[in-house]
Image (cartoon, rainbow, N blue to C red; front, side, top):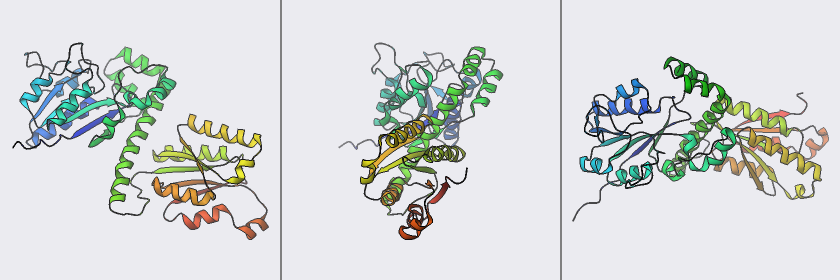
Amino acid sequence: MNEIEPRGKLKVFLGYAEGVGKTYAMLEAGHRRKVEGQDVIVAVLDPHQQADTHALATGLECIGDNGTGLECGPEMDTDAILSRKPHLALVDDLAHHNQPGARHERRYQDVQELLEAGINVYTTMNVQNLSSLKDVVFQITGQEMVETVPDNVLDDADELEMVDIPPEELLERLRDDQSPALTAEAERRLGELAALRQMALRETAERVDDDMRDYMTSRAIQGPWAAAERVLVCVSSHPISDRLVRAGRRLAEALRAVWIVLFVETPNDLQAPPEERARLLKTMRAAEEMGAQTVLLTGESVVEAVVDFSRQKNITRIVIGKPRRPRWKELLRGSRVDRLLDRCGNTDVFVISDEDR
């Protein structure tokens, strides 16, 4: 009886724009695996890569090079790779559409076949090629993404490495590489590049955090575990919420963290005047425009809902407001801030008062 072939491992080198160095990082990693004694081949290399990137492929066997033996071709020869059966295949540009008549329409489908055959794969892609982000990318860039990768391909990856440089450094690199067309385009889109970079950082953090939460759950470990920061901003219909959102965004940027804006609707909020509900909706929309994930929960207690949500999402920092109210009310009933501080455990809480103007 033939043994079932163990599935190969997938590692994705994720970037936010052409030129950040995804392919270079993948080839460097391939050379390291070869030095370690692994059988490594280059399955496909984007022909538009810079000369130094192509040069880095020297010393690695290329399959699908049309017999030249000099450089890897732009299309994968999946049958040849399956026949050769290396330990590791390097596959550039995961989101690529194959030529008509190929065995698969999309390159990620070729990669899935390699993985099923027990071949490990290193591959590259940009965050804007992620299928679920298609609408968001269009809002940022005004461009429709044709080449996309289903989210479950990235979700199922065994390892994700973000290749990151600031947009300004990317411009310098493009100038040094004497790529005037790419440089001019990047300079016109500097703000878009910054937004795409933030998106890539967030996607990477989300997936790392998912793995962390699975690990914590499987071992009954109490959170939060601060290996990856996650910021929660608690808002209401009070005018201070605009300040909380801005403060939360600054904190998340400083920490390179995922941030979430949460509103907990209690029975009392159902009787809120229309102007208060309109103000809350405006705050939530502003938060989304700043890059936050917005969440609406319902519950009897704001504090209990915030505590439960924070534990479920492994929140490491909470931003909450403290509107002015008569001192006697706090002495009589206590404040939500005080109750949250009593319940939040190891989570850091940042309190912003509307008196701090």
